[in-house]
Amino acid sequence: MLFFVLILVLAALGLLVTALITASSLWAWVSIALSVAAGLLLVVDFLRRRAKRAEVVEEPDETGEPAVEATSEEDAEAVAKLDAEVVVVDEHPRYHLTDCGWLGERDTIPITIKDARDLGFTPCARCSPDAKLLATSES
Image (cartoon, rainbow, N blue to C red; front, top):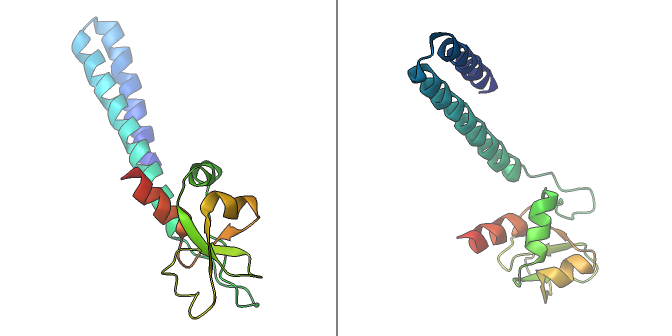
């Protein structure tokens, strides 16, 4: 994808030089259109990579705990501002959505996501609470 962006940027540069040499505004507009297309490709590539990164789930460690959900810092800050409720299990370091398969028959404690983060709990990779809560809050 980045290769195509490079080709578009180089073509836009060539057309810009052509516009300056020939004094024709048509080439300048085509150069602008190619630059916009390159920018859109970069945005599409960024969004595709971000979605793929959110899907990556780490394997659970030896203690049977689910892995930690990979969350960017900006997403973590956005999640901490939500008033959503999650559940935690006493003596376990992760917070979960109520429908998480890892919870099973364990006794859970409902808590706001802000409080869970303040108390040092981290998101479960199995139920991906950060990604799902962000998706529902943005829609």
